[in-house]
Image (cartoon, rainbow, N blue to C red; front, top):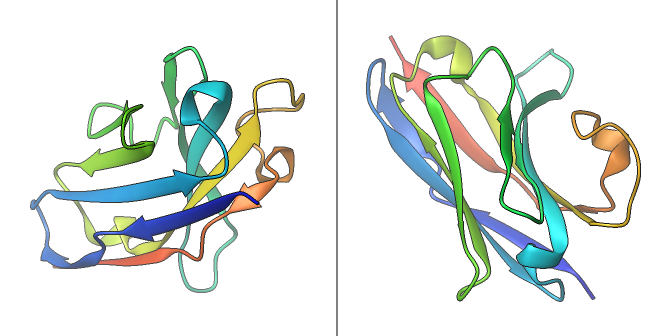
Length: 125
């Protein structure tokens, strides 16, 4: 059984940094693609970034240059470091995972089999 547990969300001020984590169990993160999505109130879920099973990272244009994904294969955890946060970054951030043999656009939520419960990130102006 694959489980994803996000943590580290909170309330920060504009310009601050925050790192959120996604601890995975039941699936070695080196054997899958791990992604972050976010959903703001009243908006559709938005792709943030992905770290593929081979370590390659891709980001949405909206966060490129500000957000950094990384992983620790030993503790099976994926991280999202968010710098220069802005109020528009306020959302619930979700971790998603799929096995590396799964096909489908990496930026589409429907391509991912497993989801965490989300962690709230709120950026005040």
